[in-house]
Image (cartoon, rainbow, N blue to C red):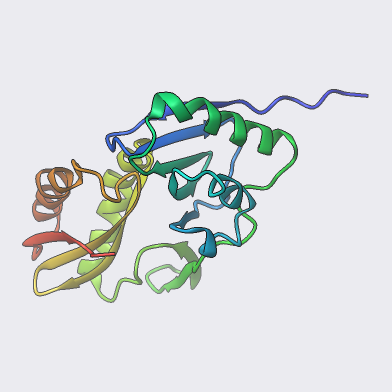
Length: 205
């Protein structure tokens, strides 16, 4: 009988001192989707999130691609709980558990600019005009890779009177440095690349 390859999980720190990124060598969420759970009651679609919420210090769980970002409260330090979390995630996956069985509130819209009408999975609000399409393109191409590398996600919510509103998820949520990233990084980038953008703000959650 052939032995099944062991799934490995390692931990990576993030700019948010309350968040840790745990990276597996398999996909946890397919199709470029993400899933965020901020309390046990909303985690019914994720057996792994339910397991993690059993720990009293876990305050939120975020999945994307091959990683899960865990946010904790201030009761425990990472050096006390990092190995515990990594072992729980590793055991769960190696026991055959599925991280996410149902995506929470997936947003799907039709991109009318395609030669053929194509349904696209996205967590961005559906762009209503060319300016909003350009904003989403810039966020996807220049911002999303770097933010996901830090265990987070920033998505487009609206564009009104020159103001872009985005939503912060994963390690970005509640991160002390997110305001600096938002203003010095993302706002400056969008102002430079998208005519009409004057300001970028984060949606209050």
